[in-house]
Image (cartoon, rainbow, N blue to C red):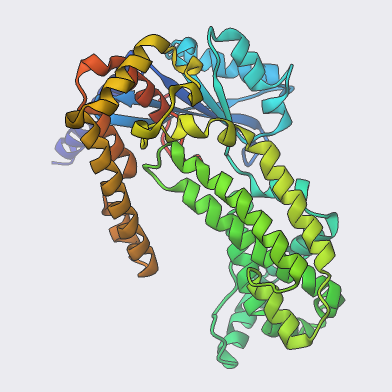
Amino acid sequence: MKKSKICHYLLKQDRTAKMSSNVTHKQMEDIQLASALSLAIDESCDIKDTAQVTLFLRYMSSQGPKEELLGLLPLSGQTRGKDIANAVQKCLEDNGIDINKIVSIATDGARIMTGIYRGVISILQKKINHEILPFHFIIHQEALCAQTFPAEIIEVMNLVIKIINSILAKTLYHRQFKDFLEEIYSQFSDLLLHNKVRWLSRGNVLQRFALCLSEIKTFLNEKSIDHPELEENKWLQKFNFMVDTTMKLNELNLKLQGKGNPAYALLEVVCFEKKLLLFVEDMERGKLLHFKNLKQYRDETNATIDTNYFSIALKNMKDGFAERFEQFITNKSTLAFIVNPLNTNTNEINIEPFVINARSLQMQLLDLKTKDLWSGKFTELKSNLEELEVQKCMHIAQHKWTTLKEILRVEALIFGAWNSLPECYSEVKKLACGVLTIFGRHIRASKRSLA
């Protein structure tokens, strides 16, 4: 009986392995047949501090856009742009993927990725026989804040994380702190643990720290742990400013993380850059309409806020965004083409990365605009996208996250509209499919690898 169960288990394992192999084989066939591909490259370190490259691939299948984690590529020795580019090229070659099908590459905007001569993108561009679109939208908040904020504000953040970890790291302290919060009927029962791998957690951690600040100070005093900064006016101003700012960055990141987002969703970054100008004006006028925590601190303490200092910090962040995300503004018409083809001027679209016949594209697009039978599809698409956005906003407001995941994806609606066009619009469809392969969301290394 026992032997029979073992045999059944082994047969089940073998069947599962074969099914997995068939799925992977089918995916690789789809990738190799795709006319356009996009890459997302992220360089980081694992828990053993071994440098590695996370390589994502986005392509168009017969069912619509697909994303896969193509590989986690370990790097030994130096991690120069040349080393990363060679690792990426080898991975593509090992999987039988034509490098000339790449239309765009997304990175985190680090110098090793974007350097004019030795950056990964420039090295790969030389090996591809047409222009590619480089995008820097894998937003590493830690790097972005460190590069744009004054060192004093970063030190404020580091101290907060240090205090939180000192409380949570010691089992006795952690238990006593939770008991203390319960005794004083605090609205929270614990602090949030900051995970450096998921930097997005930091905004929520800082917000919880701000709401529990009074309780934290009392607890630390009882333990004779001295952090005089928690009573200093300038430190508290910087802390509350950091809470407000990181929460705004979180909101942007979460928008870019939504599954099923097409490339034009990246224009949220352009919108955020404009919001930063609004935040600067708000700070300079001293109204603090967009800085809830800092305003509350001012109202409660009558402190004079150093608006000039914080305005400069916001301007630096705005300049950082403008530099890192310049490509979004440059290619705005190209990205928006998939949802707004009827109002598109072909002279404003960058067709070079997609290897499109310009003459055929112009004629087909003109024909599409003038035939109600087909142009009506995109009028209907816009209406459907508006309705979908209303549903999303409603579910978010009601915190119905499960329902939110179940609603139709934006890219599915867009793909359906374009896929229904006849082949006489081949160049127009080729351009739309190429744009749809561009990554339209912030990437997280959470998918299984095909390699």
